[in-house]
Amino acid sequence: MDFNDSPEEAAYRAQVRQWLEANAPKVAVGGDDLEGGTKDTMPASKAWQAKKAAAGYAQITWPKEWGGPGGTPIQQVIFNTEEAKYPVPPNPFTIGLGMCVPTVMAFADAETKTRFVGPALRGEEIWCQLFSEPSGGSDVAAARTKAVRAPDGSGDWIIDGQKVWTTGAQFSNFGIVVCRTDPDAPKHKGMTMFWIDMSDPGVEVRPIHQMSGGSGFNEVFFTGVRVKDSQRLGAVGDGWKVSLVTLMNERLAVGGSSGAGWAEFMEAARNVTGLDGAPALKDQAVREKIADWYVQAEGLRHTRNRTMTALSRGQTPGPESSIGKVVAANQMQDLANSAVEMLDQYGIINDPALAPLKGGFHASLLSAPGLRIAGGTDEILRNIIAERVLGLPGDIRVDKDVAFKDVPTGR
Image: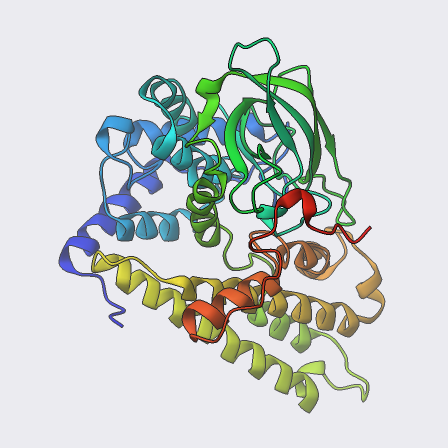
């Protein structure tokens, strides 16, 4: 691994720093919503996105024909690293620009791409990803939302069903949805993907009230939603192949946690009294926990550095990217739980004005379970690591060649 910028990278970093210093917000807007903000923060988020797009920093790796500068992945990493130093508004565009629009760019016709890529890049329109379902979870191929040909011979499709855990659906203008189009085919071969207009009267979005107090996730119901065949992404029955493009981007987009870490825990332990009246930081068990979290954090940092080195060399990071979220999400949950217990009476106060770190440990504790599901559950990612990184035998899949309509539902 090379931890130093090349001369070209150093020059680019200096350019980015200069632009951010002149243009980035100096005061935070809204709260610390991890799901992309609220209606109140949306104007600031859209304004910041438009400003980045105009300067060529919105999607640095996108080609010039689609509004990007045609930069390198390491330049995007550099910009993200420097941007994180400023109190920029929440980013509700990550899923659209990181997962949905690249899928549209890869599989839609020229007219569709021309219509959607620019507005999404400039923050004028927001996209969501409609994959997970109540009976399928992280098994995208278990989708039961169905799309059938309209009976009038128009070639249109009628979509009926339900999706769940859809981030940002309440703000989204459009979405990509994977549907079951052939129940007689095995589950990975009978799906097709479409893009849809979220304002269609047959689309109903119901925010899910989370224990953290936020409502970033949603249930989405489809009742007789009619879509043109031109809204199809990829061939009929190729929905799984198209989904893999989206999911590959998702593994990179949903990465490490953003909650309070070991350093914040150590500072809190220095100022909290332990069982013997001494600072909790002097407790051997507490020190062991901090040491474990520090080692994990360093491992994550160096894993990301390997990814950055690969990007700098023009290489594509492999499936080992799945390691980051598995470790980070579990560490976030363990650390936050230990912190809340250590804080004694302050552990029951979830109040930014009274709780240490403005309630950061509480926010982490309540968000961590969701992070262990979003972007693939721990179990899914461990399978990827086992099979594609370690080369272990794959799980036995008894439903691999069974028609989807014949797969037992367990109900």
